[in-house]
Length: 385
Image (cartoon, rainbow, N blue to C red; front, side):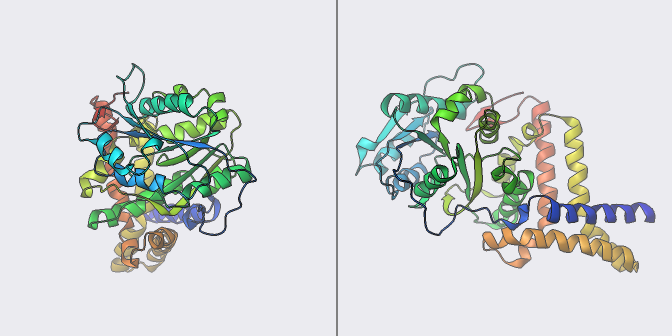
């Protein structure tokens, strides 16, 4: 028993040494869209914004207002696809655009064809309208209906795309952190996302990923990659789109934004749980062996260090306790930049093992939902594999 525990403690320590020193420096949270000066292109290109929306009346007004307030040299059209909303989403959007109604087009969503998922179908309808009304715009900005954009957000996205010849620029926006559950679970969500897709690897061309809340896409590359039809059945639309664009040689950039933020309240543990459980098993490609690997990996990386450190200090075996403490220290140290990003106290970092255990349970629940045929979904629609 002692030998097995010792081995687990050593493995956990080795995992954290690898993650910190050999995994793209994901934990630094330093790939950011930036607050400094903007390298302006010779000519600012036209863009068109597409927003898929379904029952977003509470948040869509702030999104529309923030887009209309963008400090961008070109006035750009906004195409909001009202995908069967029953809460007055379209009316809330029009009210927010009362000072520039000509820039907002409401697209009434049509019934979803077989083989599509709701969000991607809504995006496709918005893109179709943009093809008609703004055919000359070389960039399409896809954004969620709950994103409040910093006034310089679009300038920064376009400037980076133009400077570096990028085909997809996306930012992970600041998520809402309200109650105690959000404080416990939202910073780890960002931490785990960066671990899964190290931003430096994406930006260096070694992997493909994107953050779907705010994406700027080069239109010609999107067409060359097969358009949105190529990802019509993708529940995880952002990363699937990134892989599709990467498959035709497109260049990607993924970073963090400190000022553009989501206005969506998650509603405590249940809200975060459903957000993760709807797509976690999809992320694992519905693979039971991968699920088992994730569960074991999370247990070793996040639960073994604190339990070994505490248990063997009590038992008096300081060698094993030091190994466990070393893994725990590396874990907390890696997490701290994300904790600071969200302006949370140090104490929050100590609860990362608990958050990891909850996310592991959410992943298991995601698999259980899929096995029962009530898997991932978007805005009230449920999709089986």
